[in-house]
Length: 306
Image (tube, rainbow, N blue to C red; front, top):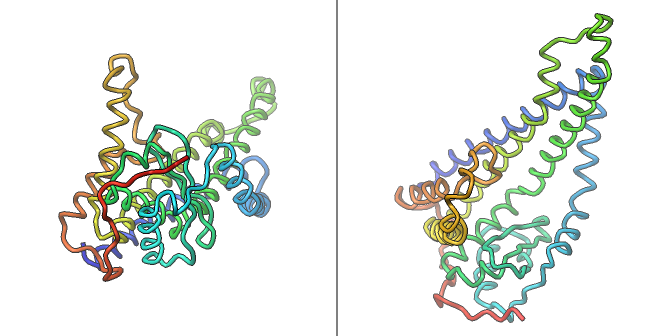
């Protein structure tokens, strides 16, 4: 994928994000207008902004404490920090993210914070299973979340979704209270309004999940650009998916429910992400971001997590 193709895909992703945001905002304002009139535009906007402004720092510290995450020092995993520093420099971050580890056999990673003070949390199951090439892909994906400010984007969307669900709940309560008046004809409400109050929470949640999947695809694409190696992340996703399936679904597949529908997933399915990354790898040269090579040797490292 050349630079023009990359910019076009990035632009498409931004348009998709903007459309979802507009739909979420429109749904919120519509429910508010239905309940309280046109003046709701201002105080709903204020509530979303206040909730967005007050929430980030509290959530970051609380989540680190709740998960039992521990700092991971460069002494323990020097090669991971070497890769991380190179990726952070390529991405233009003002500082290298701090690494934390969670004692958990599952393979997972997530990020918190902002560009000047960010945290990447890894499970020790992930650390023990991935080789340097695959780890570089995962770290690049998390760094892309930081540079794209996905934490801010999703928190703002979450504030709008929560407020929409809250207003819809108020509307549903008012609807139940007024059922006797509706039955005797002393009050009236359109079926469209009733349908909106009943379906707004679901629609808002689905829009939020769609936004999350959109940001994941963008982080995958940007990670491939950072490393110049889409297959590194694809191989990591393949290994994670295969291990998760082998531990659970292969043993108990006959007793498990069918796989959840794509609409109710917060992340795209791994197979779809792998397919897109493989297509990137097969499409040609990735856009240049740095002439240097990431330090990916040795192929395996010794972890000292105690």
